[in-house]
Length: 326
Ligand code: FES
Image 1 (spheres, rainbow, N blue to C red):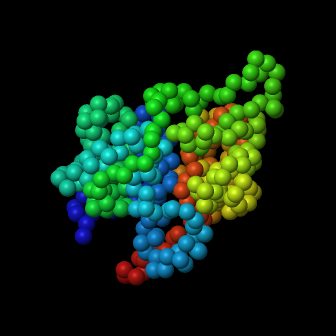
Image 2: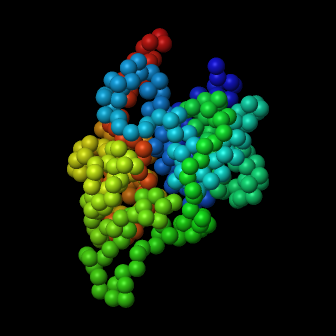
Image 3: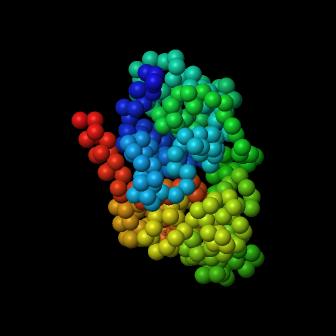
């Protein structure tokens, strides 16, 4: 049975949450501004609610061509590890669970998030701006997994990089050195794509103007052992087609998008109408991109989502659920 705060949260859908994020955005530290939007794209309510409405899990996954870990309930303590604020997750989780049990929730959602973030910031002696994104994540996590799971102790397995948030922002926007005669290089400039900021070796080289998935395929390390969606010897990014037909290669972009090619018309069409990934805006600064359509003109830092699929048929599940209720 849900408590009154859970009931309050269920009144919000993805559109409401977009508004909440918009109101919070300027208060979130730059290190987590794009990361927060990316996390909400990876774990949309529409997917969770359609899953709840589905009677046959296997059919649901087949219909949506779903692969990987798409349920937040299976990764409560790890899903937001790419946020700087994740290092405060145990305290944030505990504070949000306590808030859910004690408050009367008369203020708008974004103000409630700031209230809890402010309390935790004082507790961990950190700037409030570093807590707001991760607190918004915790509120959405509570909405998707319920209070009982939020009350469980956090099981943290990630060792966060010992860098300041400013250092991380600077590193994301800095290109690899091209050497003493680098000014002579043009098409043969070499950059790096980082896919996990907590692991120094989690990067692969990319040549100027090369597609991210083509560059990733040259990384022959056994990434398939970490993510079964990856093909052996084809790098850390799950890919199927490399022609923007399958929806497998979506990524979140943490770094400056000025050094990436803008979305192609095919990418805009497929990502919007077939893959239907939340957070893909079609704009150059979109936090979500299809990696097989992105060329690099500098270093890039990306996040690989834990699942992929084609969400075009999601609305069938909503309709089925609402027809059953009538
Ligand atoms: S690999 Fe299929 S859409 Fe990019």
